[in-house]
Image 1 (spheres, rainbow, N blue to C red):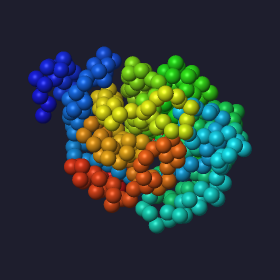
Image 2 (spheres, rainbow, N blue to C red):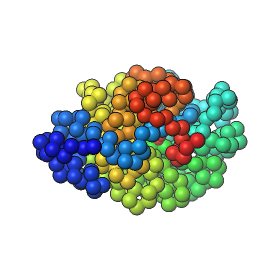
Image 3 (cartoon, rainbow, N blue to C red):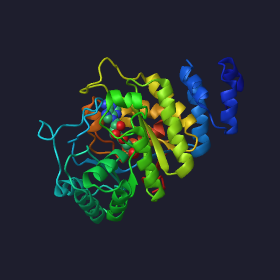
Image 4 (cartoon, rainbow, N blue to C red):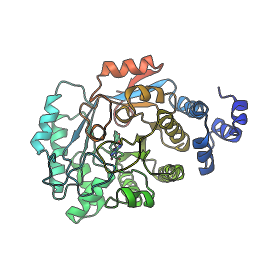
Length: 363
Ligand code: V47
């Protein structure tokens, strides 16, 4: 139970009351939460909300990540994964290579295949349709969570068709859901400095809205811990909350802690564990209409992700198998976790492990 006197002493009595009554927090509340030196107090509010929503459950998924290519026209400064076409280290999988990756894990009970890549200059939409069809054929029971809003907009531009048409074609080829990547921080100031070539924040929200209207759910992310201000983080969260009020299409929010290696963002040392936990907690508190918060162990480390389950997170992501985007930027976590490891981490953290699919239905 939350002790209101503790929050009154911290000057956050009104925030505690709002949380207890299930009222929405505003930007000013968010700023006070970020400014609060007592991370445990902030975390306890988020834990209260997380427990109200999910009890003692902590979710995980048996999934496989596949990157079809790292070739990208955007060249975002924070990204260590992308290469230009022809550059050393650039790769592009054929449809058969993608299938081979699935076959390598043939005997794993995978329920979610997560497929993303860079914004490739000339792969046609038919390539992506073939991948979706082949994946569905090989794994008819798994859901395919593929292509960020940024990729969808890029496919539309390359193909000379609308994003709506891209979404419809991909849906009929087997796409079940969009992952949350590419949102970064919506602030035009940050995007101009870090990813000027990328789809704007508004564009990202528009593609998500369109997907939701077509019955395609999606996730949302926020890449934090670089040059953004606290206010810009909160504006990002509020923009997601407003869209969610409209569509109810977001399933899960994933705060992505900036990994500092091998990219062009200078003079930034990355977040401390306390800042990571506070960002998770404030995200849980601000995003009162998004059901799930993911502690993405790849970026947080497994140990901090376990602690994040007490700071608003209810999901641990999954087995993953092969991760490139975070690891190429210096993430110090394993490449994969087994079901046994996920369950052990969750259980030893004091929660009940619950296997889910990408829509958070119990498996
Ligand atoms: O889109 C890029 C971000 C994202 C860095 O939807 C970086 O279920 C940290 O979106 N440091 C990819 N982050 C990861 C992602 C994701 C992961 C797991 C699950 C889901 C989901 C989505 O990582 C990229 C970009 O926003 N990113 N570079 C970096 N240096």
